[in-house]
Image (cartoon, rainbow, N blue to C red; front, side, top):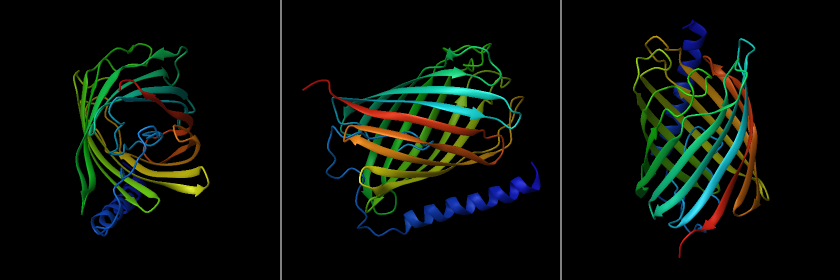
Length: 274
């Protein structure tokens, strides 16, 4: 990896350490993310790479959908249309089913990507050092097409640890995740990891902001790649308590991260059972 990338990686690592230090040194009076939340209020997990520790209320369902347009350094382009349906199973448990429409860089057709199921468990709440902590386990199945570039041909298992705080009107989420895959590593690496730190808050009225620093450490094997570090900036608009729009950009700092623009919606559909 070029020396420039090493220098940028070091600065970004220091930024993450600084964010973590702020969280660890936060006063115990910081309010929990979930205090007094309306079960019909939307709880967005998009558009960030990171995920909050919050869960949809038991018996309620929420839908997230979006579009993303990627531009790579070699001037190729790709499109992504992620959709997730989230079900509240219990007060601290949530199940999400995720799918995407994918047009890989250089592909002529848009296909349906690999499907995944994600189970989130909010383990503890209001810890003085870590805030609200959750574990997210994800299983991805090889339902997409490797030939068309909309699938990896592998079964993936991921575990992500989540720490969420709210400091006044500002919510902060810090994630670290690990992924293991089947296969021989020729299409995608057999092992990967991700880190992310995001913050979000109000601007004025129903207009809000979201900012995130994220990274994918270098991977090995035939399909391995250099480390990726990127930044995401987005605006959100709350049409209703249960309906939130978002739009923004993701930009590379280091590594083969594409330039991306995106837009999406989070819709809390309502309660399925009473």
